Image (tube, rainbow, N blue to C red; front, side, top):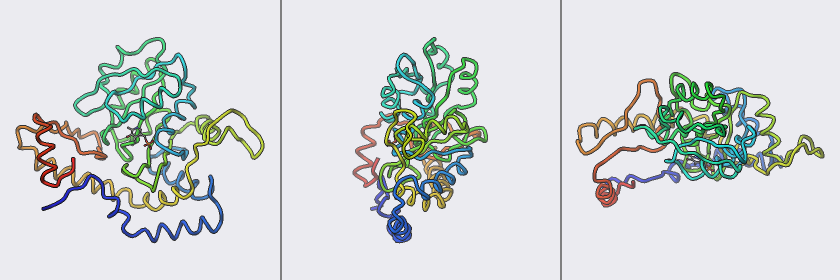
Amino acid sequence: MIKVEYSYLQQQFADPDPILESIKTVVATGDYTLGKPVQEFEEKFAALIGTRYAIGVNSGTDALFLSLKALEIGPGDEVITAPNTFIATVGAIVATGAKPVFVDVTQEFTLDPQLIESAITSRTKAIMPVHYAGHPADMTEIMEIAHRHGIQVIEDACQAIGAQVDGRTAGTYGAAAGFSLHPLKNLNVWGDSGIIVTDSKSVRDALHLLRNHGLCGRDEVKIFGYNSRLDSIQAVVGNHLIQRFEEITETRIKWAQTFDRALASIDAITLPPRRPNKRTVYHLYMIAVERRDELLVHLQQKGIEA
Ligand SMILES: *Cc1c(COP(=O)(O)O)cnc(C)c1O
């Protein structure tokens, strides 16, 4: 019987030696915090997404929380987001003191641009679209609405490294975007890590302070901040994996297309719309079915985790 597992971490890291060798150099130099590996990963990540800057932090959750803080979102403000997301999207908004406001999603699982405007009030400070399951949100429409109302956009791109819409990479649309490098995400390291991208120097400068106690030198503190640095050892793992990232992404897309072809003719299954203007990176492969719970039991009995 073929077994289809929910994750393949053991297989992915079956040969950890090249990564462990690089970690040895970090140990030999004692360069554990915000050193060379972190800077190297930030440069590579910014180049991968296509932004001027990338700022490594300690989780995807902090990537969203600190982005909101850097854009001065806090108590009294409202942030529009999607209800079908991992709890951390909403948790990051609530942690700033702002109020999350939910707008429903399209068949592609992402914010429905047609419903956003009716949720905007005088308190709306930002929209946080979630590129759910690797499906990029309708960013051209969302940015147009945001500009018209003078609202910031911060993208939750935790599930969507490498996704594209209208020829632009997810994460390059908003004032900032947060990504997760959690072991179960598409670009995964050996623990918790996250990264933020932005084109704005002032947002980058604010994030450098926020992630490192507000320190702007060894003894000088500008603001009260947090301890949310990207670990050097995780950055080493990231530097190895980022070289293979296009290959990892293309493999996911290829398998999703294989599933699509195989499932398209089954009446009880509805595939989400596949848009020619979007590159979906399939963090998850999702379908709509009429008898969901029965199908889940059936799949599990057949050794297919779902
Ligand atoms: C994983 C995830 C997060 C949080 O990332 P962590 O690295 O686990 O903190 C936030 N939003 C979404 C949509 C996620 O999938």
